[in-house]
Structures are given as C-alpha cells and as structure tokens.
Length: 115
Image (cartoon, rainbow, N blue to C red; front, side):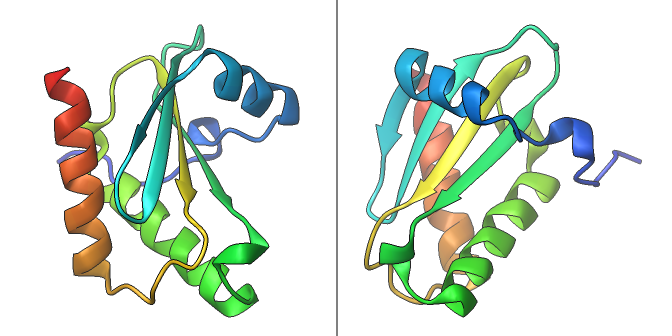
C-alpha cells in the first residue's frame, strides 16, 4: 500500500526557500494555477502553496489550499522526485470543485513531465 499522507517533511516552510524557488525554478501556467519547480538537496518531493488575498476571502483561499494539498497527497507519483514544487493560485480564481482542480493540475503536471 502506498503512503498517502502529507507529512511535515514534505512541506516548504522557509521563506528563504520560497525566494530561491521563485528565482531558480521553472515556471509553468494553466488557466487558474502556476507551478514553479526547482531541485532540492533533501532528496524528497516537497510542496509549497501560495494563495494571495486577490484570490478571494479567507474561506475561498483555504478551500483552494485544501484542494491542492489533497491533490498532492493522492498524486505524489506525478510530482518530480527530489524537487520542490510551489503551486500558486491566480487572482480571481473561480470556485472549483475537487474534480475541476484535479483535472487542471493533472494536465499541468503531465505537460511538465513531457518537457
């Protein structure tokens, strides 16, 4: 059985690490999300989430973050090994169901894997 948790080790929490990823990472965009991927030295897949206040009120921002975390938890195989990935929600993102968010993120990561 594969491990389907979102452990603390798999989170990007350091502000300086976010800055390094923004500067050195590879940016890819879709309609509602932008991803930035950068290699790391820890040897594990890590996820960072950025949702600005322009995306909506606290309830909407937290829902977007929950959807992204759940996608990461269930689809870790799509994320590149030994890389940090930051997923940013674009401003004015419409309310999405899990299936819509999953479909869009899936296309984004499959497209990224092909390049």
